[in-house]
Image 1 (cartoon, one colour):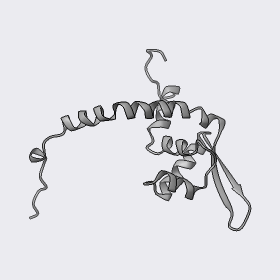
Image 2 (cartoon, one colour; image 1 turned 180 degrees about the horizontal axis):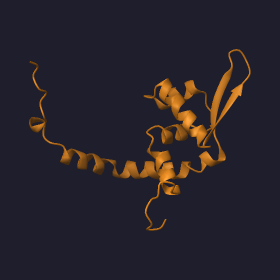
Image 3 (cartoon, rainbow, N blue to C red; image 1 turned 180 degrees about the vertical axis):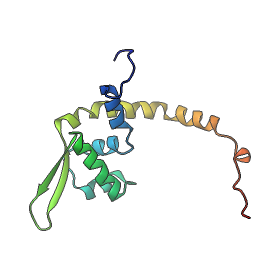
Image 4 (cartoon, helix red, strand yellow; image 1 turned 30 degrees about the horizontal axis):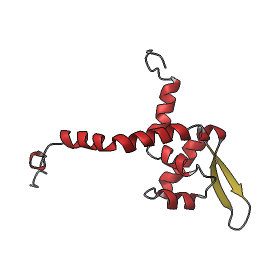
Length: 128
């Protein structure tokens, strides 16, 4: 990377945008061991709604990171797997996760230090 400004079409911005979506990295990481059905992904991830998972999978597919495979049968089966391009993001996601594991307590302490004490927090305005 250079010291030039991050332009709107900058590739670094593209990469940061991919990782800034809350669930992108989580879904990519959940697919690291092979293709999964959406139900399996929801069980593996936890805390993600069907709607948000579908939106995330579509976004990752749009960006060429995930492939959707429809399988014939009754009922039809759909699963998702990483593309070769998607696999290239696993190492950076792993590195970022390692950083978070090592420094997460420091980040939480900084957040706690900047929060006002409970007695100073704004109180809800009483009704009329």
